[in-house]
Image (tube, rainbow, N blue to C red; front, side):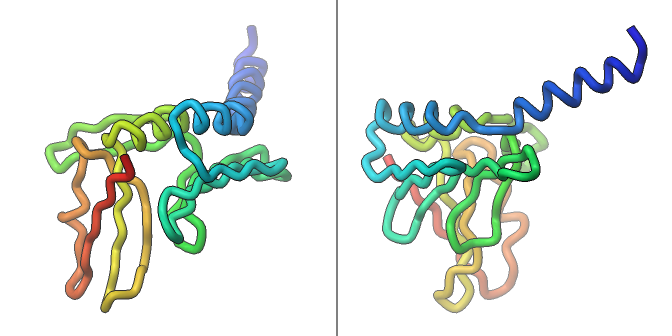
Length: 146
């Protein structure tokens, strides 16, 4: 097998992996007891709390996907790697994220400056290094939804 043929196979596999199975996400949300779930052709929105809407989205023209919160800058493509201050880490796929939110191992971190939300993103309870990056005047809030 030629090197270029091998690269084409890898690229094809990556393209298929990069899209979320939105129907599976919706079904898993129902099984886990998430009540406010809205599925469209290219996304699933999960309302975790007031103004805390987690979105799984397949980007139509780019063969890519992302996870993020509405109206905040943070987003991630594909699996999420959580790292601790000691250098240890764990990687979770989108289904692991849903389960982690329900189990309490995945938390929601909010960064506020002068009581205004600046960002909202996911963190892991056991692999948490956010305190190393806090800036003067910032406040960190952690939410556990289950």
